[in-house]
Image (cartoon, rainbow over all chains, first blue to last red; front, side, top):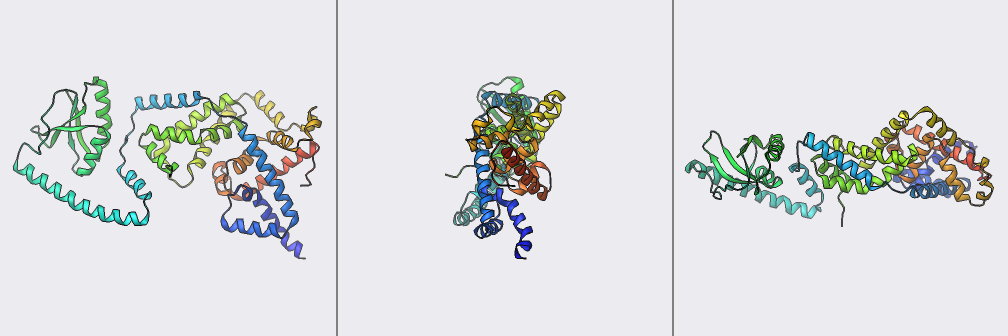
Length: 226
Length: 186
């Protein structure tokens, strides 16, 4: 009677044996299978067959080799072609993602220290922004900047109102750009930024400007400047 | 040292990071290739397909929601590509493959010698399974996918995954038995 009652459960356990052998069962199911195997010699024998199949499946797959370098070359050629046609919207600037990635790597103790450090940083940032605002109001020439150079490739940009100083710093860093002049007397808060220290071809400058324009949370307006 | 998780790499790829794409490719291309080559049975086709799979990863990284492992997501894309490629094959090629899949290993003149080597015979029979059975056996044993993950990749209910795996193993046992090795199951 017991054997009959246990048959459906045994069948259920037997169906799980391949996953038990591969180590992909939940802890609870793995315990159930272990208990059943301990008290059922026939099931244990069938489990040995499963382990044989697993070993030979791995062996077979490992003899299949690997793709040639051609596959990777083809992939990156396709990516290049695609990027040339339509550059990605958020190229190399994902502040939220990077913060999340950084926080996920911290231990709880480090996280507590980071929270304290973040609070201090916010206070400092507020002080810096206040200082800039006061200075801008008092001096029409704007914050002190390096004397405007003429070598390289440039653009004029108006940052979006919601962009923080931190956003702008990260944005400029991502594109290796620097503010060289501003705010300019051209209406609104326009800044001249240097995109490269060398003179880039016109279409290359156009490409960078288009990518920057896509970052609408940071850039309100941007245009290449000779 | 902790390596960057696949999920973090996908986040970077979504932002156009080619280096992250290279890392992800280096990490997974061999397994994806083997999964595909077992389905399409042609290395050149499999190479073309894995380029397409990773190009889809590049394009769709921004839409990856992290509800499943990155490798599971990639295998699902790979499977779709492989099945589409199989559908494009001429009927004659498909017929030959089907015939190969149901070939009785005992018909092979060399089978008698191979009977002595159970491992060799088992591997030979693994290659003789139908595409559906090869796929599920590979996903469970080689790609180490859970019931839930196989269900997601193949697009079938979890109970069907267990049933299909059971019948794949049963068919494998029949092929082995037909080749002269009785393992006492089923």
